Figure 1 (cartoon, rainbow, N blue to C red):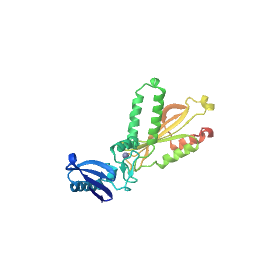
Figure 2 (figure 1 turned 90 degrees about the horizontal axis):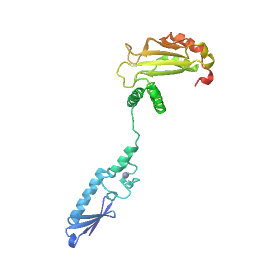
Figure 3 (figure 1 turned 120 degrees about the horizontal axis):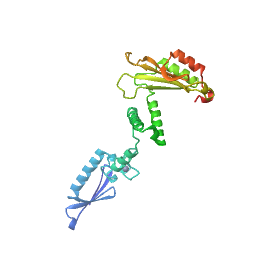
Length: 268
Ligand SMILES: [Zn+2]
């Protein structure tokens, strides 16, 4: 029988007799490793070699059981596999469990593509045939897409005139939205800004339409990198002219907003 401590591991090798002749029985850190070929010296050499290899691949590799490492140099994962202290278990089962639990990281670009695809699918269903759940799905997807597209593309920012108009509209209780070209859009980016307000119930009867919506575009075409400028006239829908028509100047839009502020209770 031979005992030795190699790199902190306690090895015991016992030569076999009778049927076990030419073999050894190995105990490593108190754990029986079974029968090994060769005499005691040969077995010790191969155990040392395996210990060197275990150190080389590291305990978190899960290539060797805990008994192959010096006590106190590793910890056990929740499943009882040896792993580096503070590290993640490398056992295939644990790796698989972590992969199942890990949140799927989706880029904004991939998300907006998925949403656009979902919305196209839902829009193929006739509005009268959509279920309540499908209507809700469409509404949520659209809201998220608008949110994703409210972030300017890299290198761009909301032009001051657009930001000022939206701030003015919001301060009067109007709703606003700023939607850039879709993420991943490869053409020249542009921004569509809308400011709008529903006519209050008390004055609805005096109008043909029920809302003001002004939609203006700022486009990067023919502009220096990162710059945009007003593009086209924009469109308007107003209570006395509900069909879509050309938008007036930003100054005129501000005058309409100032003359028709939302009641404070509506300004959400
Ligand atoms: Zn594990």
